[in-house]
Image (cartoon, rainbow, N blue to C red):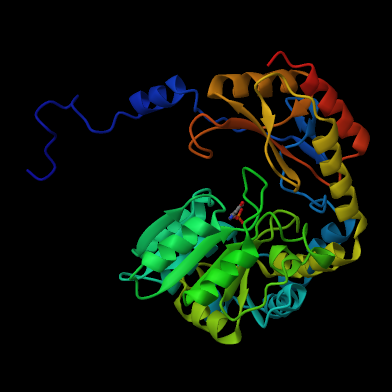
Length: 395
Ligand SMILES: *Cc1c(COP(=O)(O)O)cnc(C)c1O
């Protein structure tokens, strides 16, 4: 009897087609495009070359000849798979050395390397807080910080975007046992910055911890690309600095850095670290070369600043559209509705430019946008061509 179907077998709670139709009706269906070849900022799709303004490869390192060579060398030395989680037998000398390099790179006592950024944050938050504690989360935080806070089962206080006053008020009123402030450093869909110095001062005043996610600042901001915390000269045992290595670093993975004791405790407690196979040692090996390139090739950050300046000074947009307030390589063009944002993406696509339309739930309802991502691999002339195409859109 336990396997019996419900009396009316057509009455099922699982109508996938209806759910997909609802996604279509809201113009929210996502499609993947298959990339047939990568050549710097040129991507081949359906046999056509498109100029890409969609990647997070801010420094243009993902296809660097030295990284290709390091990958081959790493594979020759280590093989491919890590074979186990880091706490069993998956932590190689390559991982160990990478962690030392990362800590030095960001100027913090110790770093712990993870295979990807998303599980880093979904693991860190529950390792740090639980019931009776509170997470103070910026309204525009990345999905993995939001999910991490949910998994932690702590109270979640969402403060107004980048608003240190709203945060201060909430901290003052909170009776939580322990308080964790979590924020993107560079907001992923807006490109603007969190007020990091003020947030750290609040952490100190209210006995809180500050966790910053610098996925879009690492490699791009700060001297030598050391990231947002270094750029803001943050130094405190209350700071946990997390960044990802699949964006500006051009490879894969993520890390968290902090005091010796904090990082040791995170290694003991973070379930997404403890119960997942370590990243391939060859990836750790490649990342060591990537860190060297990030620090040495300053011209890449100089080029990025030049491209950002061009967008800010030269972009002309159709009526009703606006450029977000960003000084970073993430330059959002806020269009509003989902349908017009998709139409603009398609029109640019037809002209050979790939600029993604970002829609809810990735961004708030009514703020669909073109998210322009700049890379040191873009020539100024390529950006100029895009800006001309944008100015000519019907809007
Ligand atoms: C991309 C991103 C992540 C996830 O990192 P992955 O390594 O891609 O999993 C985390 N946080 C922010 C802010 C991001 O933009």
